[in-house]
Amino acid sequence: MNEVSLLYNYLIVGSLLFVIGLIGFLVRRNMIVMFLCAEMMLQGVAICLVAFGRFHGSLGNPTAWDGQTLVIFMITVAACEAGIAMALILMLAQRTGSLDSLVWQDLREEGQPAYVDQQVPEERAEDQVWPTLTPAGREPLQSEDEQTHRSRV
Amino acid sequence: MSLAFLAAADSFTFAELVKCPTAWALVLAIIGLWMMMGVRSLTGFAALLGGGRPAEPGKTLRYGKTIGGLLLVISLGLFGADLPWLANPAAQGLFWLMAVVTLVAAVGCIAAQSPVYSALWFALSLLGTAGLFFLEGAQFLAVATIVVYAGAIVVTFLFVLMLAQPEGHAPYDRISWGWFPRTFSVLAAGAIVAMLTLLLGGLKDQAVAAGRNLTAREALAAAAPNKDEKGETPVLAPPQELNDVLHPQHMARLGGYLFTRHLISIEVAGTLLLAALVGAVAIAIQGKQRDRVEQALSPGANHP
Image 1: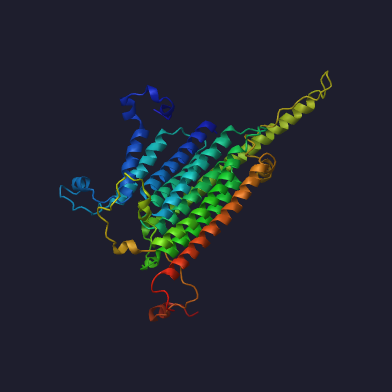
Image 2: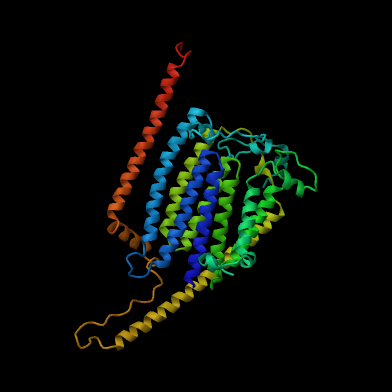
């Protein structure tokens, strides 16, 4: 198996993941989605690190595990970041009732113009679809049709 | 034209750039991502596509997401055309499966309008990343990614659900899936089974070859004289293993390395986790208390 091309493939996937996360962080305004995009950038870096460790590590080489060790510490820091960021986002959302980061644009620098929404897209009915779980502990309604189709063996 | 142009950027011309699939893949990916994001007020472009009829501003491009997704898939294919290909088609196929799942889910994460769907797409992207870790020989990291990140994702998901107050439901669970997903799922299952079979066959051949190699080496060592003239035992070359990472006792090796060489870092990481825990609790409690104080001090809150 060609190790160099393996390294290239993983590096390209990791960098694409990083770039997608970066685009999402710059484009999206929902604070939780921005946070997810930051985590996605971390994932891209983690893929690159593990690929480098796999490529450079050889038997008896003490640095063979360095990539994976670094990723373990990265996951630790990401978990801390998740906890703190969730607490902060929850506080900000409780204070304003919105997850929009544009609410906090009063914190900008002095000379910067305010960003004003030129045209807000109208909420359509198909945008209001949310994933649901099956409600547990309720008896389904028995219809006549279903009763007649059920086998009575 | 291959990936080498990334390294030798000083010596390429415009004609090479036109012939390079990666450049076209980048252009297509940019346009596709732009359309996947649900771009509004695409007046000129929409008029061009809509048969010269000027589109009113604020209207989403029709079939914009479908066209954008198709462009993204084509750009992924162009990226793949420029990559150096591996000898083992089974590992290649698994790698591509995982890579495409990861990247498509990442694009879905940043393109979904609802944060709930965004979190779900991100969870799928994490599963793809865990698969890539498995392929890279990092088994512990793959499982840790699923456990840690999926836990964080569940927390995020719950926060979004609590904060965003879901309204409206749709009976989409009753929708039949139709002929195309059924056929596609059967084909995908067949492809996965075929690739796994090929991969396992290749692994078995490798193991047999490694065992034969080891036996030959032992026979050689037994035939060789045990001591040379200085009385030292001859140094045997280690058996041909690919990598220390691929050792069968993966977890033991990783744990040993982590708790000997990086012991202080482990302690620092534990302290960091504790500090983050205390900090998060402090932030949450302080915010709640301040809100309660503000509510108590607000006018009209005096009467019960």
